[in-house]
Length: 141
Image (cartoon, rainbow, N blue to C red; front, side):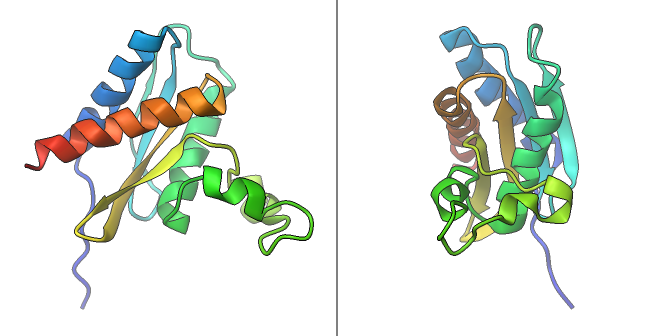
């Protein structure tokens, strides 16, 4: 029997609050998705002004980060021609994201979920995702 650690709805709300606070600070309204360790959506927020197209992208970034247990950004170079994961972004219906903004949430060396952001540049998406993770991690102490 397995014992699985996963984010709760309260945890997801903390992640979203941290990410949206950073998004407000930098002036970029974001779409923010939080999923559990298996990539299933727990919570989603589209800030006023968040791009309509970014709703699915944010969810897929969270899904990828949780399932792959790595940042979506790390897939960028690994998915280029001649690299080990070339073409992975076309797998499973094109749901795997290779653009920055998806970050796994790791507690006690286990991926318990992930956060994905979209609407800004990849660097802005990453910055806001990291802020969400930092707020969540501080709440554990």
